[in-house]
Image (tube, rainbow over the protein chains, first blue to last red):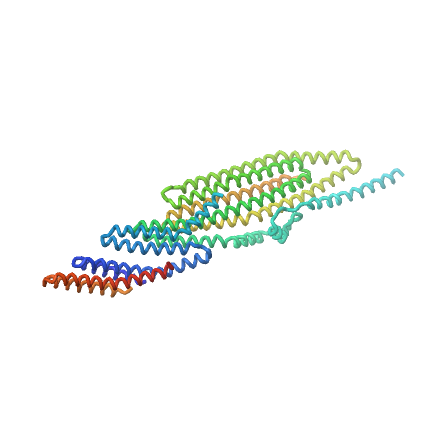
Length: 128
Length: 370
Length: 64
């Protein structure tokens, strides 16, 4: 997890993108897209040990809990949706970005359905 | 001849008088024969291991370090599941803080969705744990009141047998009535109120715009105040009644002794003294029994109090952690759960105090004279 | 995290831009357009491989 590599890659990508924007705007979008993706991939790989530690703690605490998996999957969907949406809106296509965000929210709701079920059970217990 | 007959008669009377106190003593120890304390078996075994039985309380086993050792053991037994709860809550809070990056950036909507999901996860964990603690506490209260229901009449009977008849009657009625009222209050009012407070805080956690946390705080303060008021009124009533009945009983006892010593011809003094010995003997057993009651009640309720205190500690630590990481919706929810734990602890502690203080008042007041 | 990839794409982009200008100046408009499109397609191929790598990484980390 080399922060200097990150910063360097980001600055280089930005510069190249700006340079190419005057001549070939399509290429600048490619550069932005690929820089963003590379950095996201590296950052996510760097956060993996923390996620492993957190899910191992939750395994110890409550072996048959569904929370850790749901939360981590939701996190992944959020990261991906964010990145794609931002790239699209950078390229000027805000409507596509909005559709991507909508799809992400729907995916989150679907992943979190077991959580809603458990919540309904708890509320039933409270009311009884 | 007359002198010899007189001497023989007085010798016979003295011998028969000498026999009476022993018979009375034999009578005393059979008072407890029919008494089966309504205490759960493990506690009964623990107490008799420590030398505390309804018949006799071993003062050697009541040393401070033994008591502290027992309390630390109880603490260790009940700390494991709150700790697991704490670990789950802290993991969810850490995941939240990792994802909170989104809250500041442009694609804020996606970040809000994640925070809603994480609040839901946390709420489910918290509410499940809090309602488990609540049901366990009400079960403990039930078994405590069952124990009191079997203990108080037996104790009142002993107080009556040691001469304080009207005190015994007053004690029985006040304490039984008080414990019934308390049980009704706890099961019909306090438990539903706590459940609704948990529900309100759950709703408030999911939708942070409704500031429902202050409502939960207000309810908690009101409930604790009401509990304190009830206990104060109860103890004051009991003390005032004891102040009246115990001296009246003392006067009655002294009058009885005076009558006996003056009406029974030669041995009146000896008989009235043997009456005092008998009252003293029964008083000793009564005090032992009272101490047994206090210790058994404590052993019944104290583990539950300690476990709910551990849960309260867990919730407050998790609330502090989530405030540290800046997740405000979770902070409100966890503070409400802490409030509900406070309500449960207040309930249990008031019940224990009610039992202990009433028995102690009786022992102190009635043990003053013979 | 290979930064050379960015350089490669930037290099292709610059080459395509230069070729485009040259061909436009010398009057061959259609060939200029075709080089642009060819460059775009080549870069797209490279990027698609990299995107698929990224998605595999994310899938494996998060067990999606």
